[in-house]
Image (cartoon, rainbow, N blue to C red; front, side):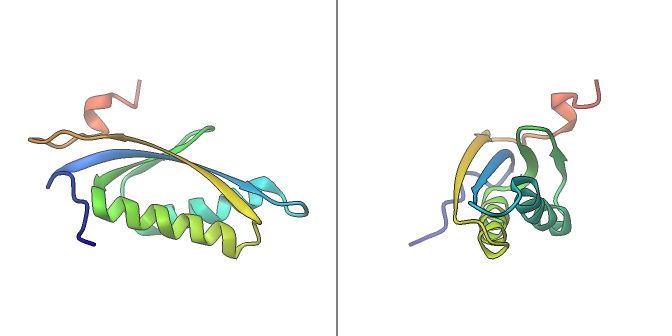
Length: 102
């Protein structure tokens, strides 16, 4: 299967990973995903409900896959994963335009 690069521009991708485990702390499992995102080097913003990243579609989806795997590797039995994606066909979507500092 070919890459699904929607555009050659930066996008915003919000990801919420909800791990399920009968024995492990949910927040500890979520931290495994956040560690992957933080070490990826992409611009990101961690919020109480999701983490938002900025970058190329393919790069962000690879990071998202690695984050999900990290949660499972940390001991989750299963995960619910929700994505929100904002992209444009002719220009970047950036954190700066969303005025995240207000």
